[in-house]
Length: 400
Image (cartoon, rainbow, N blue to C red; front, side, top):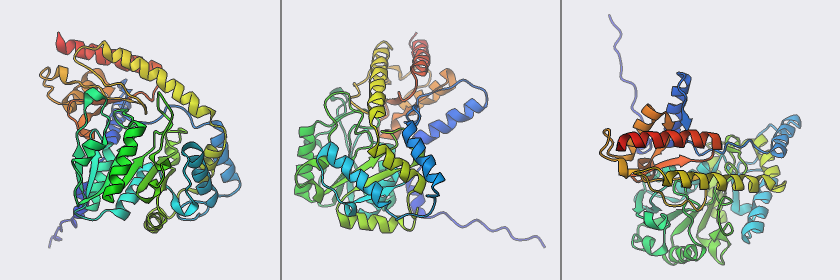
């Protein structure tokens, strides 16, 4: 008698609400081609190409040598919480206490914790387009609904309070603002951000400010809406050391919020990661309390690369681009080549570009648009030159 084959148990319904990060998909496909011996220029992942600064690495090594390798407090060690609060106070005039701060396994984890702790099925979350890929999926995972706000490409994709106000209703629970923006590099003007704060406060809505690129702005000074009087009551700050200190693999992010929210997030985190990695926390303390020269050096280099990318994109027929004001991404419009070589969307263009020119970029569909691609210029000038040469050559071939 043959044993009866049984079907595997089904996946949970909520898993169907999320998808693999598009940026990770692009990186994985580019890596696969490289393993096959193909010379691929990667503009996909938003990861600084700089090494973690030496003094930060040494702090991590010392933590191992000192046997600081055990469990820590769920929400981070007190010394790191103090360093986070002190830095934010120094930079933005805030006054957060340890009870209003928690350390997470990266900024993405902070966002996940906030949304899980605050959103219920049926709630609505207002998100400007283009948006970072993770916002949509983590909101969907809670059972809440994303409400997307169109922005104007000709005005640099920046969002305004008036744009947001049209989408607020009794179901609105949260507004998410990412400034500087991934993927567009848009920066919300300080006065406009204040209007958004007033709007959300008046409506009793949470304002989540994603500050993961806060130090990388190309004009003016970094800004946090959390520094405004009364902001603490409805502002959620998402921070990360990944981009600022080139510590992506260390996985340290943080959240600043009212104490009851932090308590709820720590309870949630106690059943997921237990605590952030002990060794990485020691390195993070050094990053925040040690010399900051490397941050300025990285910003200067990103500005040089950004200017180069802008100049190059302007010479490519069929492409146009709003000037990035911060972060390290370009978000050019490629609709000028639609209708050629079977290309009718950014996804089509991205696939053809990888197949024929061996350049990896992220399609705009991942960020809520279908006419754009995201180019990360967190890579060397040599790679930027090689990749943009290939893009230019491929586009020329389409338009001949």
